[in-house]
Image 1 (cartoon, rainbow, N blue to C red):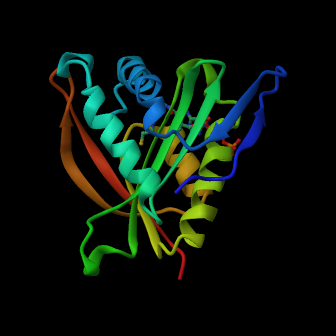
Image 2 (tube, helix red, strand yellow):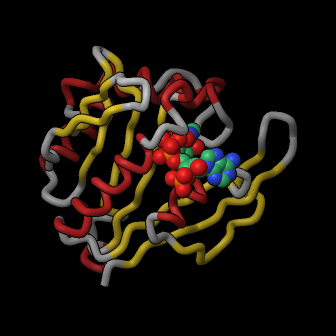
Image 3 (tube, rainbow, N blue to C red):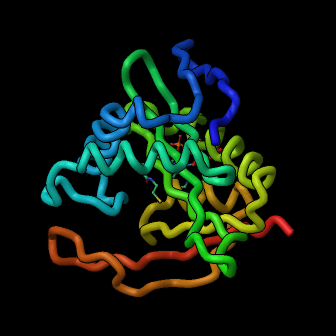
Length: 183
Ligand SMILES: CC(C)(COP(=O)(O)OP(=O)(O)OC[C@H]1O[C@@H](n2cnc3c(N)ncnc32)[C@H](O)[C@@H]1OP(=O)(O)O)[C@@H](O)C(=O)NCCC(=O)NCCS
């Protein structure tokens, strides 16, 4: 499904259009995901994992658009995606349909100015309306900013996957499993 379009105003007066990326935006989303993967170690991918598959991203965005529950909250400035958030069904099986999984990233230049909070609030409100009963996510244990944002928006930490990630310097990082339960 597609969310209603909105505008986000940064403190410096710059504006982002918040809408749902569709298959026609696949190249912009691909570029955003490749750039954000290179900016911090907090995303699942590393640049060494190679370029993302444009056809696959197009298919996923098409599937999310046609799905009545799944949603994207995407921030655009001009011809660039600067924020990417998705809530998608954990598995398309009856026992899993109440669970949505959330992933998000903001381009470093646009972090720390409220955009993530704005996108999160839209996503959770829409996820609830769409019939999800809970939204889940995983976050690197050293990602203090993300953990703060998630806790502030009602997520609770309910588990830990020790040494889930091995970083390029050979150190390990735990994954914190979080969820917000609507009802
Ligand atoms: C994590 C992320 C989505 C947050 O979005 P954002 O737009 O930067 O967040 P906001 O500006 O809306 O809010 C950040 C909050 O974290 C707080 N914060 C900032 N740095 C912090 C830190 N080091 N420790 C704790 N809290 C911090 C801010 O004060 C703010 O809290 P407040 O609203 O209570 O004042 C974004 O920074 C991002 O995409 N980072 C890189 C990729 C990433 O980490 N993705 C998440 C993967 S799970």
